Image 1 (cartoon, rainbow, N blue to C red):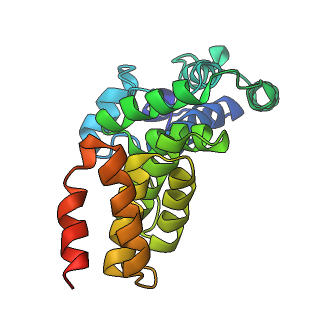
Image 2: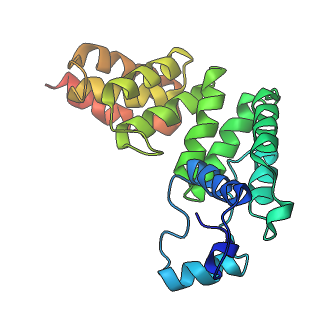
Amino acid sequence: WLPPERFKRNTVASLKQDSYSFGSVLWSLFAGRLPYAKYTNKQICHAITSAEHEQIPDSVPSSLCQVINACWSMLPSDRPSIVELYAQWSDAQSTPDESSPTDNYEEGKRCEAGGDMFGAKTFYSKAAEKHHAKALTALGVFSMEGKGGSAVNKSVAYRFFERGADQQYDRAIYNLAMMLEKGDGVERDAARAQGLYQDISLSSPYYSHADKRLSKLKNT
């Protein structure tokens, strides 16, 4: 959190040091962890004084990337003041999001593939706001597994899968059927699970293994 000048002797505190720290706080909110988490104290000191900053996650909007980089300027005089930061933050928040739900979903997939689960959840949530079935299903999986800062919440996962299933997305239907078959976080409903398995076994070759679960249910 400390700016590079704080590692020098007889440094006088200033508000521009707070600006540097604000950049680190903003980075942590998107990265979902503390900066330099795996570094020793000596390595942290070297990294900060050598301008070896943490990589900004792909999930950070470009307008906020500029804010973070400005806060991390090595010279205090080059950093924005708190008043300027407030104005830049307000502008970034008020900028309309013109990306499509498919764009947001694909960006979420890229973040997830790169291990940025917090960023993935952010983009999936944007797509889900526009009723994107695959994004809704991805958020269901995150809720099932406690990813992206989410606590494990199977009731929430069930609702996400239901919304995806309403749009006839086969993965959402399959996950919903699995939960109902097992009574996993919801009341067991074998009859409804059977109907859902039957729907996707007829409509989706990808879920042909649903036939096995369907046969198992019919024989119980």
